[in-house]
Length: 157
Image (cartoon, rainbow, N blue to C red; front, side):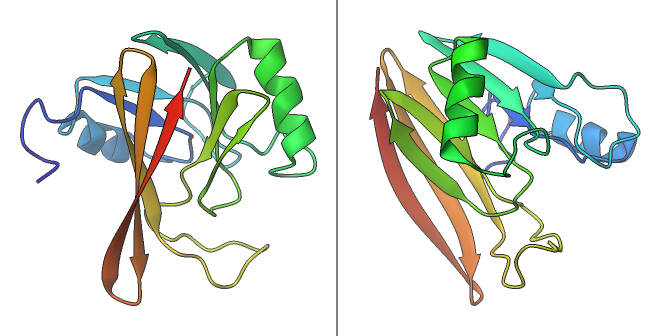
């Protein structure tokens, strides 16, 4: 369903692609791909990136630079430094989405359910965002016990 040409316009990847082949696969899904460097990345991507999609400024960072990892205050500081409406970060491999001080924070988790030293029960997950005017509808896909669960979260600017 996602592989229909034109269905996905942008891919925002929080890093650890590791190979050119993985990047090339993403190119089969969307033409516009934005990637930031992960903590185990050999490819030459920037540490952080800000993109504008519709009315939203979106900050991208892998997340290994945030201490403690996933800390709300540290993420909020980075959000202010980047001056973004939405901050997407990763590294913890655990899905999370929340609103804080009228900004939206997303950690899409790990689509592959990759191993984490922090957590033993990693749930594979990824996020699709539908951006329309001043609203973002986020669809969270999680693989829980062989079932794909979808959750919808809305953020208004």
